[in-house]
Image (cartoon, rainbow, N blue to C red):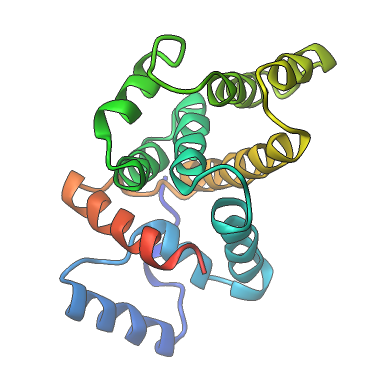
Amino acid sequence: MRPEVLNHGYKPVTKLLFATIRLFSGRSLPDAAKLVFYRPDFYGNPAKRFTHLALRGPSTWSVGDRELMAAVVSQANGNAFCIGAHTATAEQAYADPARVQAVLTDPDTAPIEDGLRATLRLLTKLTRDSTVTADDIRDVLAAGVSRHQIEDALAVAAAFNITNRLADAFAFEVLTPDDFAAGAKFLLKRGYQ
């Protein structure tokens, strides 16, 4: 059940901002963006900072890699909103929709590097089982992934395990492919701040 607060629980200045965005973009603000405006000091601002750092901060993973990680974690959680949003963003970041679709269909046969494949397996296992072992980490290291890259990937997983649960709790509306594509363009330009 969608809490009414996501539709109407905002201060007048925030409602005006939403109306202005709709006027200039021709689109309503997605529920993920609306959520960060509700109690911004409690959730919104810290979540934006953490997510931006995880997906756009310094890393040897590309933006496309990290957006793909977000899509894979969201797929493991079965969250349609975040699958759509981060699939579209990864497709644009890589400029290769077929590659992203191949990973989401079968990461074991997808045309990706072994280190990314091993990392996606780790994130999927962590998301589904809520645990990983030392052997799981060793497998990722053996595939050529550095400890720092593992930490960066785990930050993406943390951000999206939280976001996926909030999207489920607040019953985020799943957007059209055009709206997801427009959101992806914005995320690639501005990030999560």
